[in-house]
Every structure is written in C-alpha cells, then in structure tokens.
Image (cartoon, rainbow, N blue to C red):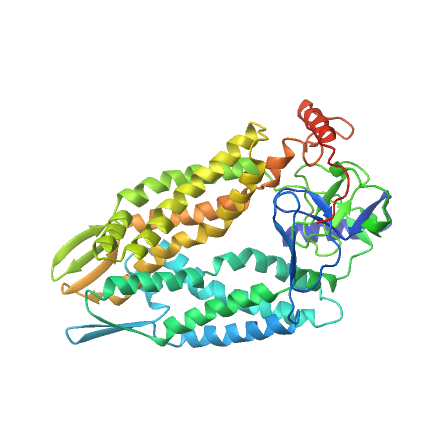
Length: 493
C-alpha cells in the first residue's frame, strides 16, 4: 500500500532535520531481475520480443508482456474510446418495461437510487460505486497516466496514480454488470414486454474497450520513464545511497534474505543486511511506495475476513434476496430458488451460471483460502504449484459473484407497478453483497509467497521483532531448507 500523506510528511520533516546524516552502506537496485508476485522467486528477465509473455519458471505466473502494438498510442486510443462510451452510457436508457400499457424506463443510476429509497443503502452505494463511480475514475486515471507517459520523464504524481489504478481497477465491474442485465432480462420477458435500451449495448462496448486498454498497456515501459532516485529514505528519516547494477554484471546471486521487490513498481533492491519479513525498510526510490518484503499480518487479516464472510454466508442463502409480487400474489426468493426458477423455465445454461457465480464461487473462495492458510501455518510443502494456481483463480473469479446483486438492482428499478407487479430487495442481498466484498478483500490481503517462504524456497525468514544477527528457530529451519533446495542461483524466466 502506498505510504500515507502523514507518513510522507513525517519522513520529509526528518529528512530536513537530518540532511547530512548518511548511512555507510549502499542499497543496490538490480536491473533485469524480477520477483514473481505469486511464488516469490527472483529470476533474470531480459528484453523479450513483441507479442510474447514471460512467465515464472516455477509457478507459471505472468511476469511481463510485450505487445506488438504501439505501447502508448494504442492503449490511449482505447482509453479515449472508453471515456466516450462511459459518458454516452450515463446519458442513455438501460431498459424499458411495458406492462399493460404502463411503461417504466430506467438508466444506470436508477437501480442504486431505488435501493437507497427502499432502505438498502449499503447495497445501493456498493452498486453505484462499482458500476458508475469506479469505471469513471479508472478511465480518468488511465488517461492521465498515459498522457504523463508521453513526457520524457514520468512526473512525480504519476507513480502514485498508477499504483491506485492497480487497486481500483478490479472494482470497475462493467463486465459483470452486463451479465446481470442479461439475467434480469430473462426474468422480465415472462412478466411484460421488455425493450433493451442503448445503454446495454454501450456497456458491452465499454467492457471490451476497457479490457483492450488493459491488454495493450505495457506497465514496465511506463515505469522505465520514471527516474530512480540516488538515495533511499529509511523509516527513521536517514538516507542511504542507491547504486544501479545489472544482473549480468553480478558474479553471483545476492542472498535471498537481503532482497525484496517493490509491491507497486516491481523494482528489485538488494540491502546490505537481511530484510525483515513485513516491517518497512523505507520508500521505493522509483515510486515512493513503502518497501516491505511481504504483506503485513497477511494470515491473520485473511483469517479474520474469511470468518466474517462465513458468518454472512448463511443468512445470504437462507433469507430471501428479493420479493416478487405479480397481481397481488408472490413472495420472497432466495438465491437458490432463483436458480431453480431459471432451470424450470428451460434456461438451464443461465441457471447453472447463476448457481456457479452466486453459490459455488463464494464457497470455493472461502474453502480455498482457508486451505491455503492452514497449509501455510503447517509449513506444508505439498501441492505448492497447485495452491499457487488456485490462488490466481480465486483472485480472478471473485468479482463475478456480483451478478445476483446487479440483477436485483435492475429488477428493483424497472418493476415498480404497485400491486400489479412489484419487486423489492430483501435483507438477504445485503448479506450476500457483504460476502462478495469481504472475500475480495480476503484474497487481496493474502500473500501467496508465504506458502513458498515457510518451506524455505525463498531463503530464510527473518522475523520483524528478531534483532539483527539473531535468528529464531523457525528461521534456522527455513534457512536449512533453502540451502538444501539449492535455490540460490539466478535463473532466466
């Protein structure tokens, strides 16, 4: 996580108070060396040809991609297209329902507003954030980042913007929302005549253009336009000199316990002493991000979030998520009952999609992350590659559980005909939305590199509260395992 403004101001004050104090040791920034964000392996990565993807030799994680298209002009063109489609979507109608001559037209903002009016403000705000606010913010941020990348040197504000883009991009869920529109449409066609508005087609086009922007964006080329400062600020305000060196000029791989990579820009640094596991060692000389070897309290935070998600999961499935009234008759519907209703109507593929996204995915995320936490605590070396792949799948599919929440927001907005036909949200949707959001945060908090750390694949572990030069028994065990693995030579990805 990028350093906060009070933290930066505090370090800046210390730097002014101690302008001449320097550390005798130097920190080395190693070029052409990358750390896999999934397994933590450091490996050499030379320039790769256009149209290729470099993957980790140990776990298969994508490390870097080179596109055949123009690295800046192409994503900027798609970004401008996304901005135009986004503005057109806000000004267009999403759907029109005609019931016995009575019509109701809704747009992208109607669903969140109706949920707020019904008293389900938590869900209304969430839907508004991920379908209206977040897409606009990430499009604007990407436009500013790409514009800044055309300068000879990346401005000081651009690295922080790029770091925040990486955090906010998963919360722009237009691709999930388009499936919610499709599911809502299938439920409405039996009720009345439904006319899909231009906003639905614009959202589909927006989904494609935003995906194309991310696909053609070359983040590493953008980071290369950012200078690397000649000194690194330590947490106590002191500064140490930074030397840049190529991995090709190094006779041997530095000790793994002395290396870390910036979680934001990927810059690899080698320190003169072993790096603590989670304690900050200063600010990145390229992007200003807090330099930590691993995420802070990853296991405990993920465990707490999974427990919260499990608590919300039961009411999310036991209580109705919406009430459907047709000509004065009707009642509440749970998530599973909604999937069964689609099955009975002959929409079997759609029923399976809803069942998978709304029932299977949350359970899989909770069980999968729990399994990874338990095996990490037990220092298990079994199935490391499988667990790494499982984590990447969990991280990718987490957002798709929002299909039911989006569907309900659309149905609540469009079906408002008093006793003739009416759909209202119920408390179950709040619990279900909480499960989706909490599991997304849980996947973000978990650091998959810990699974490889505890069995010694990434060098010895140095506890944060362990004095320099002293190692805990666990560190010595992991260090012996690292030596046995012989994993100390640089390998080309």
